[in-house]
Image (tube, rainbow, N blue to C red; front, side, top):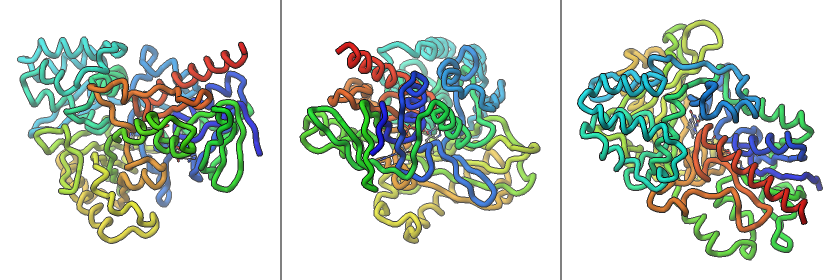
Length: 475
Ligand SMILES: Cc1cc2nc3c(=O)[nH]c(=O)nc-3n(C[C@H](O)[C@H](O)[C@H](O)COP(=O)(O)OP(=O)(O)OC[C@H]3O[C@@H](n4cnc5c(N)ncnc54)[C@H](O)[C@@H]3O)c2cc1C
């Protein structure tokens, strides 16, 4: 039996950031991770000698006035080798036979869009105002889709504004809060960055610091049960029988997975029902390409190619139709050519659900056929932005929502956690606090997703933990 002040279950970026914050404040923290490798969605993997990333394609808001600067400085992450994307074009949107270059900087962004859409000036000024009001509470209760339609009459402009968001969140007309769209857009306009190196370097740097404060991150430790006594959690049991005791527990796992770790009587049925019935956002299909030697020059921006007239509600489903893709190249370690390139497209769980029980090592042919169909479409669409791309590819691998379902135990392989709903903000934006006084949650299911979202959420979780610690001390 091991003991710590705080036990964190799950080593996604959210779990690691809470662990580091509390370790820096003098707590002894133990992070328990079920996988062999830490990092959750942010982990990287190697194929041959090439490293690929699952998730870390782009991060926003790292310049000195940016929304993540202070948090990243406190976590030591600001010193990692970040490369700023091109100032004059961090996002390149291909749509309806036209190409739109989106620059960094709020004024530059708005002015560029006014040049493309001079007849929408008034709406663009109002959009600028909204994008710079990230802290406004009303954004949570307002529909993103209805707002765009109330500001703009040109549907192409709405699609240009929405195209990058199609790969950063679930674009659903009936639910997406303006809050999610604004938080998934503004930080990148302020400043957009890519890590030089792989996501593992970020994860490993967090772990290195956690350990330097005398705390621990232990992998291959799947927590199966929280043990409750007198309404408080006293310990966590792992699948190998080991038990970890603590005063405070933090779950970085999906909240419905967290509920399942608690015996029936530990939680009020109404809370459990609310959590396990919340819908999840869709997943992502990623095509990882290893490029031939010096075949493609590095491009320092993201490219988006939209084939559908509407990139809202356009994730791949059972009809296996790809509506649009994002292309993101890793910064080359040496030279000026791309070694690995990722192509992403949103994908619904229902497309792969029937294979959920298959072994990761031996997937059925039907699953591989689906992956091949999507792969071919992704490459066809990508050639619009990079002519001749197919011939530049040496090898390819792909992942689907099933990959995240199996590796991270994410229900439905969801890429962005619970679906937030502007009509029900109080039900779908969750507090880090739970009905069990010494159990807290963190991660992208609570409020906001992505590196930006989990970092903001980790800070909220740490504040709630500190309030609890003060309460305990005062008793
Ligand atoms: C394909 C894809 C591309 C993305 N691209 C970007 C991007 O470019 N930029 C960006 O900012 N964001 C991106 N995101 C989103 C971002 O990766 C996530 O929002 C973020 O990493 C989620 O972190 P988290 O801490 O909430 O949880 P997760 O990363 O889901 O981590 C949860 C951890 O808990 C562990 N766990 C689960 N159950 C147990 C258990 N019983 N016991 C112990 N451990 C357990 C899991 O193994 C996992 O390690 C992308 C996501 C995807 C899927």
